[in-house]
Length: 320
Image 1: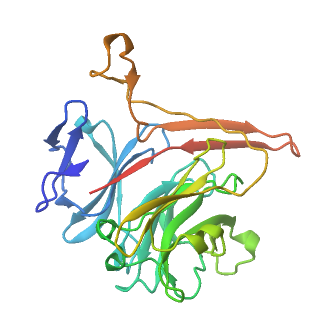
Image 2 (image 1 turned 180 degrees about the vertical axis):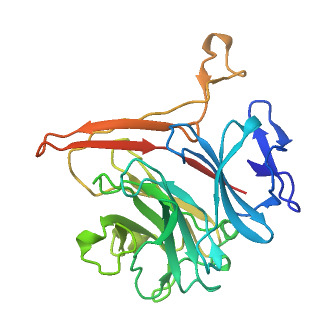
């Protein structure tokens, strides 16, 4: 889902198989897609089938819409507004942060133009809740002019993975530390808010910034950070893109330091397109991981007779 131009931002669909772009005329009441925002395929109505998430502008106001696919017969599921009083909207992310089997809408925002009041909201049960995160003095989301090109044109995004392998997704995001200067990747560990004894819990989970991790101290001038299992051993590692004074970039990997027994299942749902440039005897299906697919897992543990049900839902986001 993209825009056909930079003036009207009317939605269009890109068909990758024949490399064509076709305007979408079946989306009613959409003035334009919101520039530099999230358009995504993810299961947002819990039927294990990918839906279409759009960030639009209507009457000069930002709105979020969820449509049921297919693209040729879209059905509007719901529409809602962002949290009130937001000055800067960053990219949306979807994750099951409370491990209840349903995806939540995660939205990092700035409440003022200089981002001194940086927040992360979660939408669950059809309402917004402020995640009670204590970022610390002088820690905020970086402004666009504080990032080198081309990253100055890309809003801040949160990446998700279970970094400490406790069954709850954690976050990593690039943030600015005003006291020490520069932008660094900060991992936010998922914790139960009530278990922390926090009297101001507005949601049942919170996130604890890990400001003393080795990659925070080493990865200065960071532009993008993401989780990735580099060694394919079940441990999410960290990849960071850093810029130097000449605005040249390097990619650095930081190995996860957690040591414990793990088991994991790696699933890839491919596009199944045939490689037309491959030799005929080796013309095998190939492609990238398909966006929006859902995977349901049931884990049974022998511990106090507890049976744990867990649903992992995969979603992929796109920006303009």
